[in-house]
Length: 339
Image (cartoon, rainbow, N blue to C red):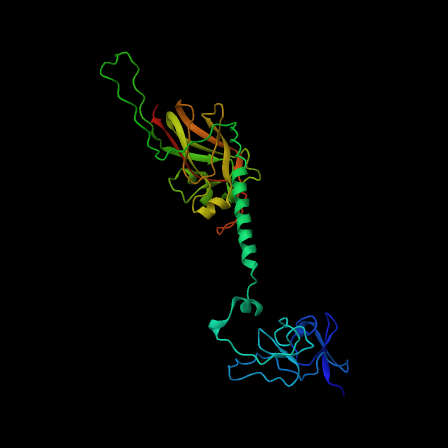
């Protein structure tokens, strides 16, 4: 029976059993080879060489090939002159001229060209890499310089709700010493009014935790949540003793945590009605900070209704969601009691 050979499926060349790479095209025979018996003589007549890297040679150990051969410059494996690629590592072999007895160079004697021949970086690669870096920098600079200016923000159809870092009002200035006795008395400063009750259009699941009263209990870890299929038109109403009403402060969303805030709907556009009068529209920010709504000063006010027009969307968080329920954690009223 003839000696088994390995046929390269890429180029069809025959190779000796044990070869790691095709001698004709350099393909890795473990992927591209197909062992057969009697398929013809291999490319070379040399005996199979195990796929191990030859140990380092010393200057006193010259290579003594038994037949014309070529030494691989990368792994120092002896190859027949009929091969184009090393049978052990696949490196392209130098000229097929029989090799002379090589000498081993010390690490300090290896030249740049020798490193390149043994698989090092080609000399043109740093030039190409440098050119690519320069092109990338030029693209970034042009993108920044030529980027169009953002359009100016569109004016809102509603007055924006404003937030003041401190909710304590500024006292009115005292009248000067020369003020006329007939001048009207100065307006008393705004204080937080005591809210007596709250009611709402609906409550989600009629749960105690989300009742209207939770929006006037002074705590941010409770809230009112509506329970209707559509949020537009839902409302929360608070009551207090007849007073002069100057402004409201709203804490939007469920402020138990940041995740709870995002998991529920928050009011965006609202209509504020005092004592059943004409509604006044406000646009809120999607913020966990308190937001001030400067309503027109109303004397003897005792009810304020906040009606939902549009909402900010909810999203899935570690708290849960997204939930289809709008939440308001707290409502506070400021003015002058008994005004």
